[in-house]
Structure formats: structure tokens, C-alpha cells
Amino acid sequence: GGAVIHQLFNYIEPGQVIGVDMDPVHLDIAKRFFDLRYRRLTLHQAEARQWLSQYRGDKFDLIIEDLFIEQDGEPERAMAIDNRWMSLLCQHLSAKGTLVMNCVALQEIKRAMGLLGGSAGSPFQSAYRLDSIKHSNIIAAFFRTKVTQLDLKRHLRTHPDLDDRKPTCRLAFSAKSLGVF
Image (cartoon, rainbow, N blue to C red; front, side, top):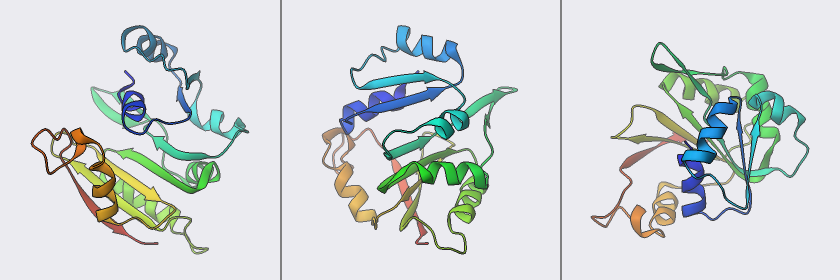
């Protein structure tokens, strides 16, 4: 429904957002019923790996990888976390960029970390596992720059409804370091 895109425009005011979904029905519903109509938003109907392989624009400061399908009522990864996919994501991420991955299991994060921390050295300096008490999925955030837990809290606290010191905070999560690479 575009919840992540709405949050991006609400909290970080991006210059440009590009969304890719392989299902044209999802895109139509997002536009018609969830009001995904931002001036700086471009939506593409395509398979993510193919689209990113053909993309020749500027590198991204933020890539959110959230590729799931439904199988028997349960979320299932639409694309395996493999060397080819992780290399493609890193290739299109800016020098100070952040890669965020939505995962349903800790094993997926461990797989991504193993692929990102190869023998030639990792392109990332910090990584965090973000868990929410409201959701069973796990978010992994990989930063090309050094980011501390205090940095994360300070940044979130710049937005009144994400400030964990206030009772109006709408975000309940824990951040655990996945270490440095």
C-alpha cells in the first residue's frame, strides 16, 4: 500500500524516490487507494533484479529491499539473498549510502552479513538489527559510514512523533549492533 514511501516523504523529505514492484495490480492499488502521488515519486512495474541491472542513473543514498510474496498465507522472500543480488545492491548504493533489508528470519540477516563481509573487506562500516514489538519481521540496516546507536536515537528524536522520550512516540523498537565489518 505504500506505507514505506509515505514514511519517507513524511520523515526525511527525499529528493527523489523510485519504487519497483513486479505486480501491476499492487501499483494500481497503491496509486488509487493509498494516494501514492508525490511529485518526486516514480513507480516502475518490473522485477527488481532486472530493473536494477538495467538502471544507469545516479547511485542511491538509501535502498530499501523489501521483496516478499505470499505463500499459503505467509510471507516468503521473492528473491534469494545471494551474492549476485547483494553485489547488485551495493553497486547502486552511494559511498555514504544505507542498505535496509526487511527479513522474516534472523538467518536471512546472517546470510546477508556473510555475503557483505567477504574476504576483500566489506563496503559497510556499521550494521544494526532493528526489532519491533509490534511486528515479527526483522530489519537489517547496513551503513557505509560509522553509525552508533546514539546516532540512530539522535536522528529519530529530531522528529517529534519518533522521539522515544515522549509519550506520543509512535515507534517502539530495539536496535542491536551486528558489529562492524
